[in-house]
Length: 411
Image (spheres, rainbow, N blue to C red):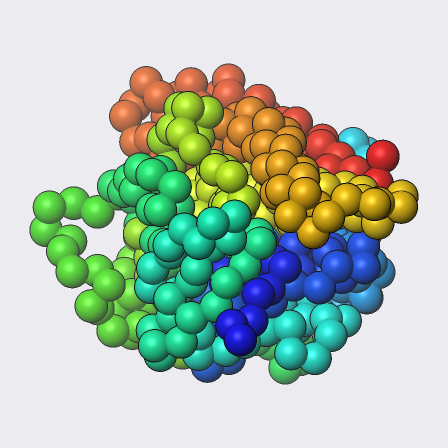
């Protein structure tokens, strides 16, 4: 007899693991399919703003992660053309909790409280079929399984998003090089988010803890800068170092101190925001979340944060749908119960979609505009940005972070 799973989540990234943990906290089991042989960490750290910490608290791991990461005091913005600071913002004065969170530690902490067997590694989804009210999932190893609910948290190249008919994310024409520097004796930096703009690039560094600094560099390659993804890490490091302008010595030291294994380059892609509003992010008993739903450029640091939000909201919406019938006695025959459960699941996912569509539209749009302005190198735009818009752009980070995804409880 073929096994039927209640909930299958594709992808053991931030959104998938948060959803699984949220469902577990609500008393619901899920199965997470991960194509790799172990937890896969892309990138090294992420900025976690106040909205992310509300989500982490909702799934019960906020305090564990706070112990491992320093809280940032504020944001400083500096021009790499002039070397002068153009704005300074205090996070604590604004009552915003901000930290740089190590991705590996985040994913491991999300996994820690999941029941054994929740994640099935080396399980790559290749196609989806209808099977009555269920979905039939075909995996790369030739096996199949059926599920009542299918959640795609499988990134920018999502198989589930493709099945839903969502348009493929587009290339922003920008690239990012990222790295993480380890200091055995401590880095000695202030607990600030340091950002630098100028000459068509955007870069920054953020202390994660007393010994670790995460840094990034984004730019639009020229026609001569081809095959970036094929360049060795040593060449990527040298490229960043040669394009820092009048950046402070502390940033130069962080990049020079980074082990070559801790440097990666990647395209910056995003989903056109109107495609999120008008596209099918859910259909029947299928939906997408995280980068499968709202890939965005990293310019406001909300990619991972919004994935955490997705997980909490989705877990809550599904719990409301699946636990509703268990709270009251039912005398219906099995077929009627299954049909009503299918209807409740559909409504639960539609509720999730309604709540997340506009939020996703807002974040993708803001990130694109902020990135465009911050990375512009024209004289007029540079003057306007550095003299007039710098504080406004910094404030946009806090404005988009002033969001509460709510608790894990059934209304």
